[in-house]
Length: 250
Image (tube, rainbow, N blue to C red; front, side, top):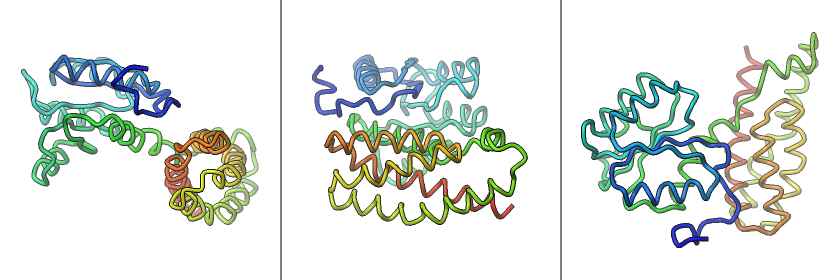
């Protein structure tokens, strides 16, 4: 393990995430590449805002799960690059990298279509947390409705009953997970995550199931990361419950 990543969790936390990083400074490029690859992410780095816009346009909106955008770059600054990327791929999260973290700067980044900002020099732990929040957590609430209907063909009433039971049984789990995380009780997380993992799989909430599995494993291995995962799992479950409620009301 090298100096850049020595304080980061030994369990890769960005596996399956492909990041496009727009950064013109070579040292910053090296740091970003090192941190993100160590955490399991796939990384592509470009040196200008214009190159970032061109890359997203060429590759398409599904090629990357997130863009890291330096604000001050030659040819095209991060604001303009973010505006163009957001116009082309509005669902693609963009995180601005800025030396100024004031309210005015945050507002300017938001207006350009960025999802969040992070201050430079980059703190690796904060960066990983922010990327997870805008990729894995955001997708964890999604149910594969087509796969669910294919699993139980012609059983619309059964599916509605299944979803109703999920809401009833798992709504209290949100508070239970957050209480375990807040109290620092790592061992309490596995017994909560295990049944959630199974229930999520039954309703084809596959990303939620994968997150529950990670939380369960980290808890059983007494890893401090389990506390963070429990909070993330609570947020993802909350989103899933809201999604189901909307579906049942439709």
